[in-house]
Amino acid sequence: MTLSARAEDVPTPGFLPSTAQASAWIEADPAVASARLAAEAANHGGAAIAAGPHEWTARVQGQRRSYQDSGARSNEWTAALERAIRVNGKAGLDRQLRDLEVELGRARLGEARHEAARTLADAWTGVIVAKRQHALLRDQLAIAMSNLDVVTKRQRAGDASALDSNVAQGDIGSIARDVSQAATEVVKAEATLRVRFAAVVPDGIVLPPPQTPVWPEAQWRERVLEEADPIKTAETEWRRAGVTAARARADRIADPTVGVFAANEAMRNERVVGLSISIPFGGSYRSARALQAGKETDALQAALDQTRREIELEAAQTYAEATGSLERWRIASETARLSAESARLMQRAYGLGAADLQALLLARRQATDAARAAVQAQGEAVRWEMRLLIDAHLIWDLAQD
Image (cartoon, rainbow, N blue to C red):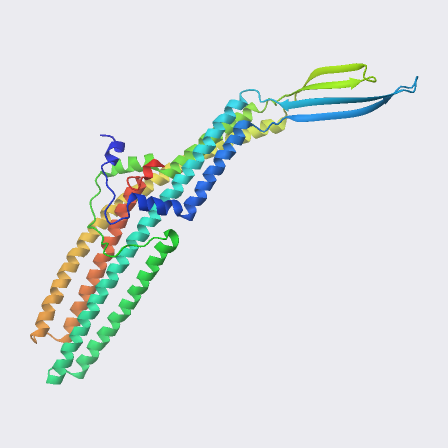
């Protein structure tokens, strides 16, 4: 089964916006809109290249001739219509340049869409993670307040000291500060998504458990290299440079200018109709330009090779991050589970009078930190998993670029 066929079997993860909604947001992104207008400009530029730079030229000349022997005067005129003609295969090369200009505009548009999709997925995931962190801390704040109530009741009963009350109140203040910071992070994450894409994450959206990549690394890398928009852009620029170099070599033979003219002379007794042709002689300027275009093609070949290596390296690093972050999430999740169990047992022990408040708050703080780390690890793992899907153009119809 080919990669293209297998790509059809990868559904868009349910926590992400639908393909229709994501495509609308991506198309409205300013960077994508700019690239789309540039692609439209490239279409017009390509049409101009194919049409060629030569235009029809009308030339009219008037003169008065005086005859010395008779003193007579003759009003005479000449009218000509001229145009340069592309020779040496230049018209065909210009049509190739037109097609490459259009192709380059599409490649750059695809690159802009790809980057916008990356940003959208990262921002969307960031909002969900920020909301989850905020909710987790609010739950811990509620537990801290409940602990303070228990301490207050014990203090009244003579089983707790004023120090315990102060410690419990300090714990509430510490967690309340974290809740405030988490609320700020939610606002910032939502602002990023709203300002860039005018998008909002609906309530109730949660991150799924991260999944192992469905393909081995070699197949992911092959797919990413096949779909990489920067490679398409660099390759098209190199091909365009090659045709431009061929055009410069062909231009060493200058285009002749062909025209027709009519003249009225000798007091309208002579009428002239004829053809004209003028041929510039190519010099060192045209030869130097051809050599320059050839070297520019070589430079873009090297740039293309560099782009391929950079994309291949990035694909390998992304795959490593996706698999590594999955393992880190599993470790963090297990640590959070154990810490939560320890905090639950410590809470029970405190209720039975078998543990002091300091030990309880330490266990609670450790459980909170472990839970937050697990949420963060899950967000990172999902973010890298989505990066794999986007770089391989497997979701949101990015493969249609």
